[in-house]
Length: 101
Image (cartoon, rainbow, N blue to C red; front, side, top):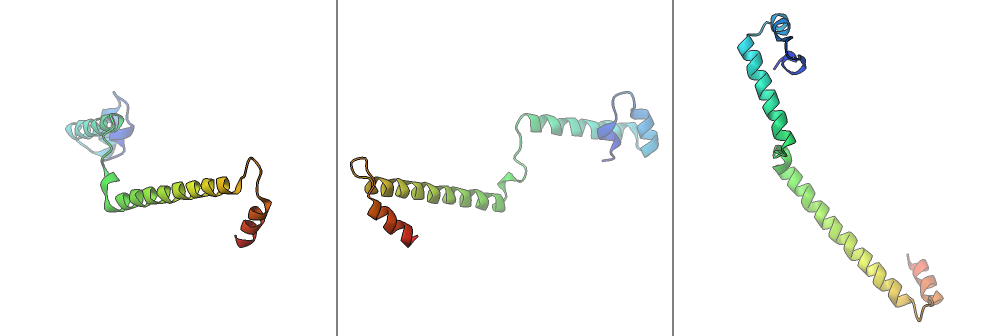
């Protein structure tokens, strides 16, 4: 599709058609196709390449990583709770952890 079908405002088609050497009917066909594609995108019709195997694998990997992070956060919270007595930290546990990490 020549760039004139995208960039020319109404009323300027004939000059663009002459410059590009395209038929008026072809210009209107391209223009209509371009406008319909824009409307579909605005309406949320974005099914294009989002269903490819690579994208699905990346989404699956992201979900798996989110689960790992959630488990790590939970383990950290449990560890912190186990190290805290009646509102006081067990410094010996903290020091022992610091040397093992």
